[in-house]
Length: 76
Image (cartoon, rainbow, N blue to C red):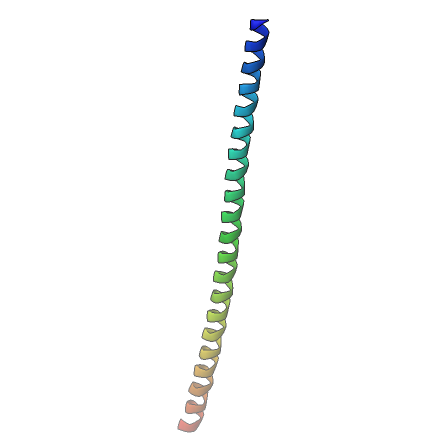
């Protein structure tokens, strides 16, 4: 009878240990997923900023080329 109780207590202890370990793993996975999502949003914002800056640079170059062309026309 004592052996059965010891086996039961050992099995119960292992079950609790497994449940606690499982919670830690799921928490770690949740934290990793949240961090990954935040990094993805950060990358999207960086790309949007890069696209915006590139658009402004393109527009500036077009204006500079236009002014250069106008200046060349006036100098002829």
